[in-house]
Image (cartoon, rainbow, N blue to C red; front, side):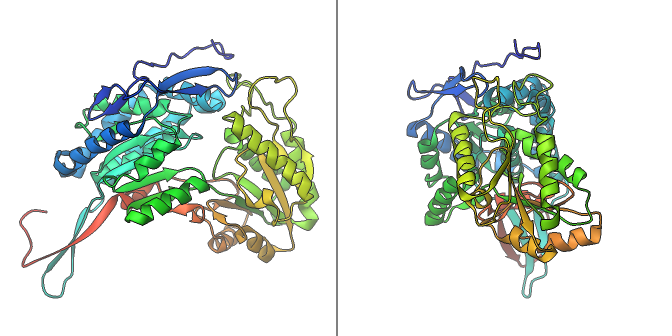
Length: 493
């Protein structure tokens, strides 16, 4: 029984197996992954751990299903129906999906309860795209009847992170499956439960054998998966270091790759915007997922004359935030996801102080919480954009306030970053917001808040990654373009 007085039983019957070639199969060893609750520090789940032989089996099943199975040869409308059925079945498991997120990552349960629908909706979005997207187009040609066909790229390794395991995995497999690809799901070792539920629902939805496969593994096995010649494309969301490794491996064998690698996103607050409203936006944004959000607005850029006032407002707000048990409906910030993440955030807080930034609030363990990976929401003031805390992704509830001279200087500071995933412009003037947004070197820019829309596209500039996820732009990386030149128009397309 959790602190909210409710209990959700997560079906663990498949946790000791992998889903390969349409069946739940025994692993080749007895190795297990232990999933630790960040709230209690106790082991809450154990799942089978894949080794190279298990990876080979999953990739082989996906390869055969793509090369000789019916899935790539179904019409987009037929594949879309499978996506809709998968969505329907996942909706019957929303309570389990919510509980899994809180148990594995420590996300506050009030948020976890509403989040599954957001992830599942990706399946509906791509099913809808399947009815309108032109997979084959007639094109003008000089000496023939020209056609441009978009065909599935092949076998896809879908590697999801631990912070948002459901939405990121579904935004990989939904476009891949619509395109006609087959997939091997490889969730983060800390958060395998959502992928198990997806695989269980895929089995019930009647996907042909080998189209959807699941292996759970540590990083070494993930590296082995990425290096398999039979894997045509890798879609990865995670750390910059892992992304660089994957990009180099895919580059060696010219495999297709999509990468979403995080950010250090800037919020530019222009002088016409109310600072109280800005603080009311930035504070909750910092608390979401305990700051473990790649698109979080962690650099706030504001004119020197308004810097101190904004810092005071942020401090006032964040000191009222309740940190604690994620099942308590009054809690606003849960724990960090794991011990090493807590140690990472604590190290950056110490580094920020050593670099000369002013610790305005937070920075320590909240009083009364002896167990769990908890940290107070933290505000650094008088931050120089050259400091490590302003340039490196901390991935915790830590925000840096940086002063600027004017709008031009704010844009310069925002763009002076190795990352470029998200950003925001706080202003009442929509024309000014658009003008500044166009000059920011980042994948998504919202007016007056940390906004994102996966139905359009999501992804980053610079070291924030390659490619896009969401919408039509998220479908294109799973398709290869083929030019066909014929003597005349064929009778069927």
